[in-house]
Image (cartoon, rainbow, N blue to C red; front, side, top):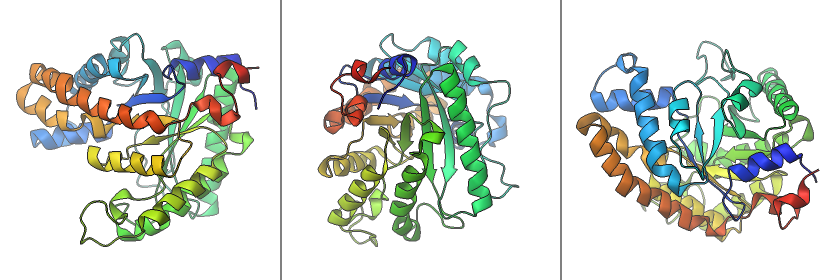
Length: 339
C-alpha cells in the first residue's frame, strides 16, 4: 500500500523518530469551558474565550517539548499552536464541538469559515474530525455520517494532507460509564473500524478509544465493582479490534484518569496491539484546570512543568510497545510507502 508524499510528510511531522505518534490533545472547546466553569462555580456561559486560549497556550508551551505533536482547534488554539515546541507537529480539528441535541443521531458538523485547505494554511500537518458512531444506530443516521466522512476524506486527498478520524463510541440511550455500555463497547469499536477502513473514506489514521471499558476489567479499579470481562477476554477484544483496522490507529484517553489510561495501554501491550501511539488529552492536563482557576497562570505553569510533564513522560514510557505507523504497511521506513 502506498501513500502520497504529502501525506507521508504530514505523518512524519507528527511522529517521533521511531514513527510513533506521541501526541497531546487539547482541542476541547465546550468540554474545557465546562471544566473551567465547574472550577469557578459559575455557568459555562460566563467563561470567556480568552481563558480557553490562555490555558491552551500554557499547555502547549510547556508540554509539547515532551510530545511529537499537539492537536488543537482553530477557534481558540491558534495562539497555542504558535508557541508549541519546534519538534512538535500540528493537527487541527475541523469539526464543530459537540452536536445538536435537538437532532437525533449525534450528527457531526464542520466548522463554518474553514476548509481543509484553510487549516493547512494555518499550519496544520494533519486534519482531524471527531465522529460519534455506533454501528447499531438507525441506517438513515449512519448513512449521513458515512457521506460526511467521505466528503472530509476527499478534501484531505485533494489537499494532500493526512486525515485522522476520531471515532467516539456510543450506544443510543445507554450511558457510556455503565456496565451495560461496557458489554457492547467491543462490538461498537470493532465494527466501526471495519466500516471506516474502506478505501472510499480515505482515512489515514484512526484515533479511537480502546475496545473495552477499562474500569470493568477484572483486576482493575474497584475489586468489588461489577465487571464485564476477565483480563483474557479484554485482551481478546483488543486483538479483534486490531484485526479490524486496516489503517494505522492511535488510542485516545476518552477522558479517563491517568491511572486508568495507563492500565489501558498496559492491556494494549499485553495484547501485542499494533497501535501506533496516542493522542492523549485530559489524562495529562485536566487537573491543571483547578490550579489555573484557583491560583492563576504562574502556579499553573509550575504545575505543568512538574506534574504535567511527569504525566506525559509516564505515558511516553508506555509507548515502548507502540508500532511505527509505517510498519502497518509492512515497511521499515516511511519512505518505503510513499508514491
